[in-house]
Image (cartoon, rainbow, N blue to C red; front, side):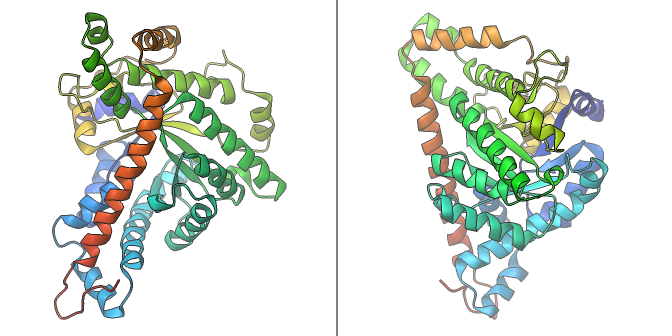
Length: 382
């Protein structure tokens, strides 16, 4: 029964990706087992994930020692450690990548979050990461800041596949899709093979409920309490509607934009919506809420292992749970507006906090490497 639930989810057109990576997952065979037994077809990483991985156990001790002996800087050491893990994970997922024609089998690695508001630096970092990992099934994660949008266009235009991360608002999501299309048009002008360029747009889910529920609790009225736990699903569902407006719906009821149709004829790939931050933060909500209620073809759901296991154990897959919900989603947002909650402000707060969180995790990761003290070797240099 465990595998049947995840298979049903996969059969509905949802690609199951794991939102975690560590050296132990790679060397123990755990990642390979998840691919084989739990229908995992991709991996996402971020600075927080690597911070936690490096802080657990001695899996990186040998590499710490070798890097210290070479006298590399802390930032260089971090990049050597993280790209090594991503490269090895990409090799494990390569059969999936080949079998799906590049649709799945991806591993994501994020640009330095301290560069989030610098376009040129983000482009340079993306090119460096793609070169360092040197695997065709690598997605470079770029945050959807204003500066990031320009970087996404440039990086896609160079033929580098991108995972756009930290998307919270529908307005920004439309800008992300536009940045992707402009990038594909640039790549086409350069004579690149569009069929080799892929992208996902990571729409963060649970954090929306966390922020809005906090504001609803402060209001405290019965209407506010009734509105709890609805915003994140409404946001994601309306994002899927926006996706259909650009790329067309699976059932043909919504036609693709003329702009996308021209790129489609040139063998370009759709930029799939990816549901990120799908671990439930409020224990009063079902632990599979952001999985079972966000089922639709052509999507990706990247899950922490606990959420993956919960879905496998007791998730109920009832078919497409997005199409046909758009009117209710808009109504849920109207209720929030009537309660005085600013959607635009929520999205801005979440983007700012998201960047800051990743920057703090990046700094912690640097400190973890800086203070590593391998035996018979000097500390890694600053």
